[in-house]
Length: 194
Image 1 (cartoon, rainbow, N blue to C red):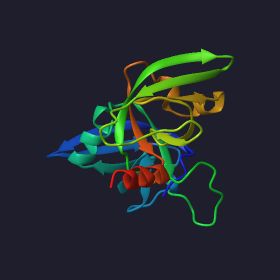
Image 2: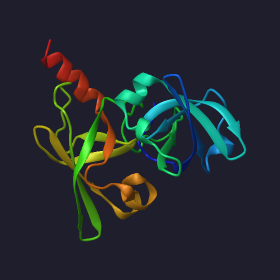
Image 3: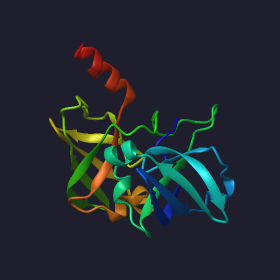
Image 4: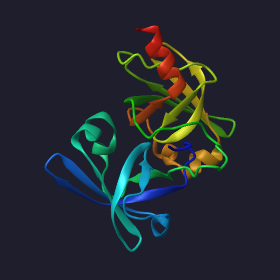
């Protein structure tokens, strides 16, 4: 389980394809605190640390993960949002995030307004995922509040701190992002369709 509060930005150091798997090696300030078999969220995707060497660690994404997330689009040098699993008994500053991406979305608008940024994203409603105004959404692992919700779109407001310390400062119209919808909302949506 995660909180959606990004701990660090990592930088993709190496990408190695092996069959349907992609081994992703990442340089990060949190590497010295990691251990093999530990879960870390990468742009909101929970992956297991499989090796560590100096300030670089490696995780493996299977083919299904690559098809359902934006990890298959990573390039060497790309920034990646990182969060270690939450510690039981600590403050939950974001919201409950599983690290299981529901689907991807596409950035359709970026606007700066009075020192903050407003991002609008579009997503496919076929999987019955929904957003609600003032509800929670996780974008590339970042826990956020929805400020505007449409049938297949939603917007979020990004404060300068989040903009500077996450991948949000790299997003442009057309970029693909990982979306994890609010876990409670997913259960309610599922019950409504039974």
